[in-house]
Length: 230
Image (cartoon, rainbow, N blue to C red; front, side, top):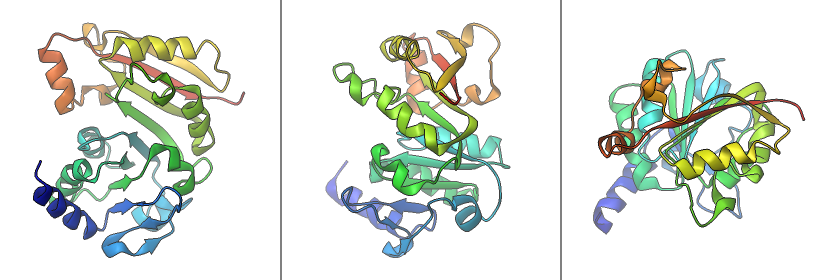
């Protein structure tokens, strides 16, 4: 992607009313449309979405394929795609705007910063879809215990984490991690979700990467975790 194209996308995002950004991880300010500072922690539903619907996050959302797919399928829920790459978020944000999807927002920030922007028990579900498995850096995997611990206070009681991946390494790593985790339980696991009836209709949504993986003959894996008190 050319530098000019990136700058054009950043300029468009800057004007979008449903995209929020944090540019400096050392200064956790949230900027909205035209760079206006906003405070949404604990009030995403009431202040931005202006409803009382449950909130779902898609982490490392990339172009927002799953965020958009979920929003179309579940109009009575709110969805927020989170990624650090603004040029990626642009695609999903533009689609949401063009299709008038009022239950969609995007947050450009590091996932490690989520606690600055979401209040206690503000999130009902978290989706992790085809995230980088970080084969040589297990501490960066989104199902690493440090991330699970960080997500825990943000999730509502009995809230869920969905992991959908083509990576056998990430799938097996998550199952291994769960042997020692006390603040979540495994509700469901499957190392080939399309070999039988789908556990959840939301799994029908396919990202660009998933379609590529399936064409390459890879199987798609899924783990559903539920928040519990340790």
